[in-house]
Image (cartoon, rainbow, N blue to C red; front, side, top):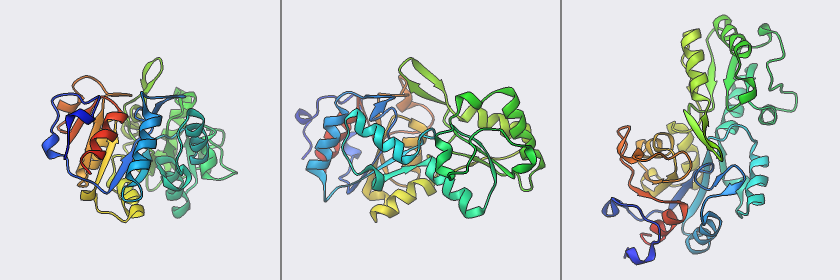
Length: 286
């Protein structure tokens, strides 16, 4: 039985009557568990609480649109911040999905991703736009602030204009992300610029696509209706999860902006102040 006395950080209004018990939890990382190198409030203890009280009956997976770090480096960072979990086995990222897509299709992409993230595509990958346009048959775009300049984007446009078919792979189309100094542009605006200039349609491989969420659900061997997503992005986290039939909890940290729960045609199952409150809500309804 759910009791408000067990939850410290719920925000209102909140639709508690719609929250169902779950068997699986999908957790966003940046903005939800941490912001850069700092954990969000009480997140380290909350994740430990979720694992201790929930598992093994409650399955947990981490789903991230982080496109500047490999899974291995991201796992190292999360542990350095203070989190403890089997991230290597439970972590799904848009970067790893993009790399798998490129390998499966035998593509030779121009990689507009951070140099460190290029390692996910293979040891011989060049994450920089340093080769001739004829060397590429596609373009992959992630978070790469140092590459998003006029000359590099022009090169990417010409690769797409000469390619047949025009293959533009976006790790995600996030408009912005949260940093310690405020909001910063995500890959989305640059993907949109290339779509417009090259008359191309990007293939998004991360959240909010159904296939990305389904990969995590399949790994847990659970149906969408049995799971809940926790995230700070009302479109990609909440909207994407609910579109495939999951419940979704919006946290008011990270990129969350006042009133997000009432915008964009998406109504979260619940809106809470932070990850710790989301954990309390799940544990008290499961």
